[in-house]
Amino acid sequence: MINEFGVKEDYDLVDGKLVIKRTQDVQALIDQNRHEAQEAPSMFGQARVRKLGSIPFVIADQWSRECGASIGSKEFAEYAKKKLMSGEFSAFKIKDA
Image (cartoon, rainbow, N blue to C red; front, side, top):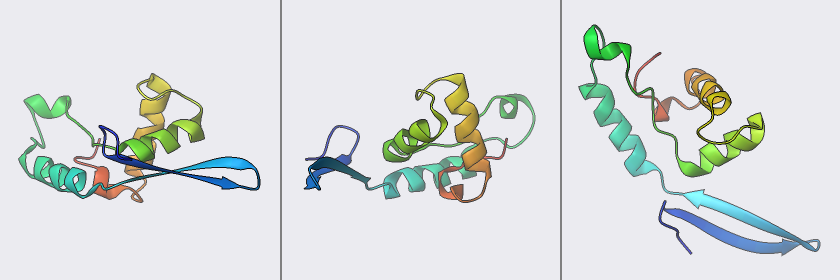
């Protein structure tokens, strides 16, 4: 089943435990990030406050569990920024901070 965020959930029983596997097609998000990177201001005025990137729900959910903070919290935002700036997740980054 695919929910309103485009997240597909599969359920499986492994060794008596329920395992939930979440997947999400993120190509549209990557394409939107690429477009926004080309259009976003790089300096002066509006560039002081700009969007750093967009993160798919399944990755945000994983990062939330890793850092122990709720999505939307200041702690989560700091953790997400570090992850985006690490280079491993550059497809989700729009501009450097």
